[in-house]
Amino acid sequence: MKISAELSLYPLDNDYIQIVLDFIESLKKNSSLEVITNGMSTQIFGDIDEVMSTITRATKELYEQKKAILVMKIGKGILKL
Image 1: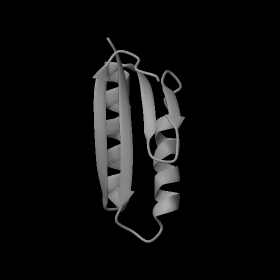
Image 2: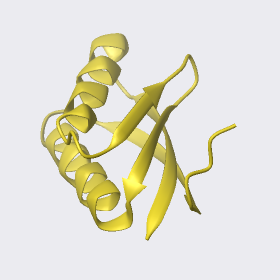
Image 3: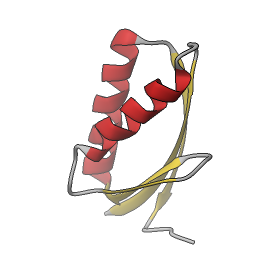
């Protein structure tokens, strides 16, 4: 099953820009997914298992080092506008 996920990361740290950039790069490590960024969020498109495991891995890596809030929206299908 294909899904779309939209993520917004809010680091609780002064170095928030680098934290967001590192998180996006971590998501892009999975070449089977399409990752699109804009000024407000990151969108991920692909198989539900791949999307969710990639988000889980990247979030665990982040939370081992930093504090942050991650807001996520998920929809069934490839929902590009």
